[in-house]
Every structure is written in structure tokens, then in C-alpha cells.
Length: 184
Image (tube, rainbow, N blue to C red; front, top):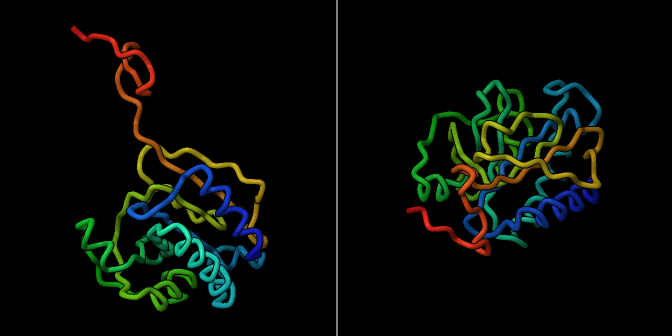
């Protein structure tokens, strides 16, 4: 499982180029990882294994991590207090536990330096282990990332990066290397 997650994160990093100042949303069903129905058999041991790999990835890239809670906490997010303050995100009153928040979010709340829970974020990229539906926490426009890794344990794996919206019309230019046209 850890090897597959390392490989998936390498594929994500190739596409996302995550670094300091960027945010990665992580959604995880530890139940799905062990082959059970989402929300039915949470595992602190699985969460610990995933945490270990994510922390190594964070230390290598300096990306900030965010952990999505389950629907019992309305898919709120666990982040570092410093990140929420820097980005002026309101904190809510909730502490995730395995039965209300999920095993991964509960572990993140336990392991982060100064954890808080927030309702909404706009992450630069995301990894969804077990179809936990992280899309609501990604910036617009989300672009799926295909990895050679299709699952973590028994859980389906989805990943996404985001890009700026392409706005304008037929005269719009999206790359600085294109000839700029006079708009007069």
C-alpha cells in the first residue's frame, strides 16, 4: 500500500509541481483501503501508513496538507492553524474522531502541529483514496491526473490538479509565447 501511494504521489507531483504555498487536499476512506464499505470499518493502522507517506511527501515538496472529514462532519477539512490564518479561513468548532470525521482526519488532527477544522478551501491539487468526493474542495478548474496506480489497497484512487480558467473568446491568448494581438 505504501509503495503504491508513493508512486501515485510521484505521478501527481510530475503534473502538479506542488511546492510551498500550494495546498493538497487528501480524502481517504480507510475502510475502502481494506476492502470494506466506506465508513464501515475505519482503521487507525491504515491511516498511520498513509500519514507516513504523506508526511514524507510534504517534507520533500513543502506543500501544505488538508484532510477531508467524512459526511458526518459535512466534509469539513483539517488543516494547520497557521495555514487557516494566512489564508483568512474561518475555523469551525469540531474535532474529528473515527466515527464522525473518519480515521484519516482524526489521525491528522492528532498529528498536525496545531490543527483546526475549516468548512471550505480551494486546494491546488487533490488525492482521493476510496471515492470520498474531494471535488468540492478543489479550485476551479479541476483536471484529472491519470496514474499507473489505480488503487491504494482495495480503494479506488482518483487524483486531480487545477488550472486557471480559460476566459475570453476567439481572440484570447493563453500562452505568453503566442503573438499578442492588439485589442483596439
